[in-house]
Amino acid sequence: MEQPITLTDEQHEFRRVMRQFCDAKIAPLAADIDRSGEYSWETFKALQSMELTALSYPTEYGGSGASLVDQAIAAEELAHACVATSLQFLISKLGMLPVLNFGSDELKAKYVPRIASGESQCSYALSEADAGSDVASMTTKAEADGDGWIITGSKCWITNAGISDLYTVFARTSSDRHRGITAFLVEADWGVQVDKLEHKLGLRGSPTGVIRLDGVRVPDTYRIGEVGQGFAAAMHTLDRSRPTIGAQAVGVAQGALDFAVGYMKERKTFGRPLSDNQGLQWMAADCAMRIEAARGLVYKACATVDEGDPRGDLSMVGAMAKCFASDVAMQVTTDAVQFLGGYGYTNDFPVERMMRDAKITQIYEGTNQIQRMVIAKKLFT
Image 1 (cartoon, helix red, strand yellow):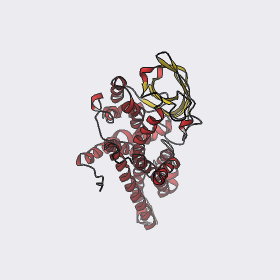
Image 2 (spheres, helix red, strand yellow):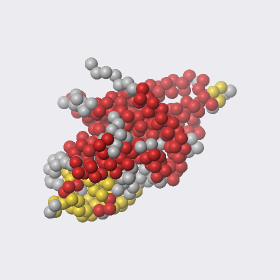
Image 3 (cartoon, one colour):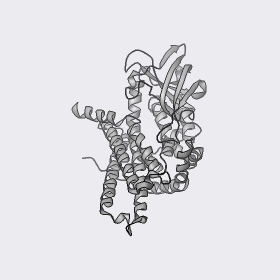
Image 4 (cartoon, one colour):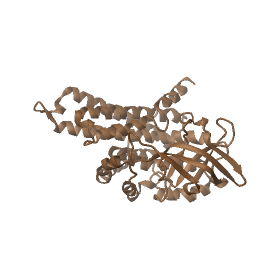
């Protein structure tokens, strides 16, 4: 029988320290980051100062070697304060997971320490305009050229476009739908161009864009894994990154509920605090229950990664964690706006930003409709 996921005393202390750090250094900047729509180097440097850029990487490459449960705690607390900043923490790990799990020792030794120190950042370049949920339809090509490859094509929805100096790029190396895709690590200054930056509903402080590679030459030593292994590497990576999107969703939901509860205790109508209204109390109770259920599912998925997926159920558990937690985040943040009434609809209060930011967690790293397909396939296979 599986053991329940309970945090250690050290993990509870880590959460306390993270909350203190986020309250002091991240939350005060969140509204301005959202309004400016610009990447915040101030918050990134704050992550560096706390060595959070190193948290996700093995100690032999200058990292802290933290478990994925620890990483989820960090992502949750950062998202509690500012979802854009939590993505600063998460995005390079997504980009580097293929390198860590499939790349050569030389690639890992050269680039992982740079990521861990915060000197470099890495983006994950998988999706295309006509190959989002169906990534096997990608048309970006990599053609063999002597001791290297020539990559031509465009990738869209790229987090950190124009900020990252490294891109993990998936490209077609043969016509085979799934086994014809190969992954490469590409330095931005080799010719990666940013065609467009998106104007988004939320996550405004995290640039999302279209990148283009026009005949960019990449040495074969920068190939990640075997030729034709790219699709498998991409799916392997997403299985291991989705749980932390769930953590991000839990964080923004908890942040919205915490703010709304505090507001309702202070705000008075008809001579009594809003929090005396049983209808609102029950709505808040439902929010709290759903958040805690989502948190438990996220921790289970993260623990499954930490254990090495011994039962082979990570794809399903990770999909459940990401899907359920992000649906909870959207419901809770919407309720938080309702708790504040008209004030909740203004940007004088953070809950409208949290609602806008929560929406993306239902979409990126696989829409929740795709997650339900993954779960159903496991159930009926």
